Length: 162
Image (cartoon, rainbow, N blue to C red; front, side):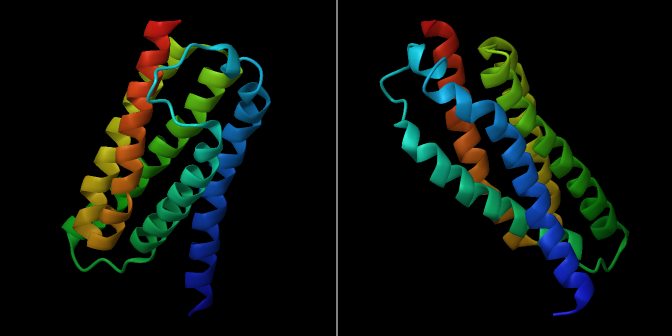
């Protein structure tokens, strides 16, 4: 593997896990306190499931980002899809961290729900562009979109129950 490929892989992993770390700064201290006091729907998973699921999702996201970033475009359409896809990816990553800050840090589930809708949209847009560059990269984002869809329903349920 060329040095530039290694730098891109490490950078992709670092960026995704930096977003995860930022979000967890606001999340971890609130799980046993504020979050524990909320009324949650019966389909709410146990708290221990979130860590492993998000770890897997961040790994998949990092690999998808790397595949697209490292792809050598062959034409203008691929180049545009790669560039725009990475832009959408960075926007969704920002929304991802912002959701944790708003939901857990500010204790604002309604505002967080608005953010998670934008998160969903930008994951979907990233996937669309990633598929045009690398089918594998697009597929790697499918579990993330499914999980965020579930998280959106959970977020809305918490708003309605509290």
